[in-house]
Image (cartoon, rainbow, N blue to C red):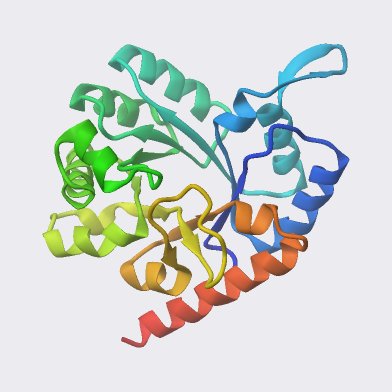
Length: 249
């Protein structure tokens, strides 16, 4: 399936019949679904009890056949706290989850040890960060900080990383031994003429795949489209073409 490499991002703070129908239509055309704090923090009164939009949408997604459910939690904290959170996430059967790679190594190691069968994916530099933002926070450029955090993830034996597609080639060129063992899950990709939204750094789908992206997270260009299925198909076709061209190089 051409869209198997797509994680569609569900970031609506509500869930109802319209959203159910959208997910049912999208399921055959994408490889997985991602939920973040938008849905986790949105509470809903249902059947006499309080639940979150994330819980309701996640369980519905599982029932209709989504195999890869990605919890974009962006965990950060002390080793004991993140370990407990990771075990809770893993118990839901999540395919994978995210945590901040700028935590101390002890916390990252606690995440990896507690992940169970779930994929531990470290977040490097958020794609909404500008060069100035990154330098103010870390005293390094986005490129340098991404390479530094990728090395930390490699050393801690994490499974995956997420970063701007722009820095995938930088990671490969940096020569980090073992980098190729990290699955790359990349947001901030667009087809030509699609809006950038709040991402400071975007890249075309074909360029991201050529740079080494394994999975692409695509949210608003699909979910906010007048025809989400057609949008997913366009992205899937672009990924398939780029992967085919990459394999011939």
